[in-house]
Length: 360
Figure 1 (cartoon, rainbow, N blue to C red):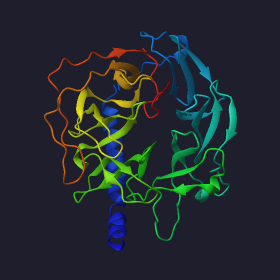
Figure 2: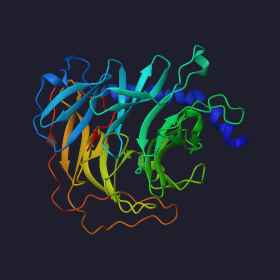
Figure 3: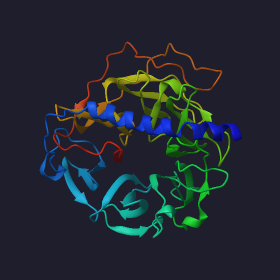
Figure 4: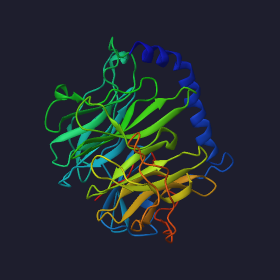
């Protein structure tokens, strides 16, 4: 633990440089010459009608898409990362307020039912963040990320850990699930599953490169098992409705990302296959029937993030094997079957790519 803490402290200045580099790189993916104003979703008509109902975010505003049209929902505020309860009766969403953020329960029309967390403080040093809400399959437990403990004597970092609490309980009943690698951003994107928890862990290798990996963990603070390798830099996992497939965004070549899917057994990940490549993908979400994915990707010289739809072909017989030494899946394979053609859903709206669609 002492060696780990010393290494983390040494990496602090490097992490500031890393973060700046990421933003510079992302900035190159949008034109600096063209400043095209994004339209509100409600004044546009989707180019393709998606099945079911979907919730998306644009600049802190919540929108519902149903039957080929958008409706703005919810009170004014800086909203993000909506998640749907299993009974499809409520949303859990993040509202940011200055130097903190909280989780709220909303009805399906965006009306506030209750405030779940209370992370604001008059003393800024005691504020906390809450992000990435997800509800357990039985609807009883809420999982989310928070930077608690923030000033622990044992763990001096301010990175995110995964916590859980009763969805109808109190924040003081929260239980910590993960122990992050400090000064990397921590553990994010929790997905509760029957066998425990899927999440993304960030780490630093001995060349000071930050990696993201998808992990699975059986119980709170247990040893987590890696489902992907560090150099694959996979993140943003999305589990299919039947729990048998995992979609993810990977960036192994550091130049662009790939949208990948793999079979998931509940504890292990099968061979990954690339279904889309060559762009900056974000926010994968499975269709209600588990046969397609929605995701965000930039369009045009302005680089607005638009919503796309992709039918996911059945997996062919894989030629790749699972890496037995680490439990992480091997390098992804593009199968020789005809690749699906993505369908652009929105045009000119520039949706918030850090808030994955919530779809049922």
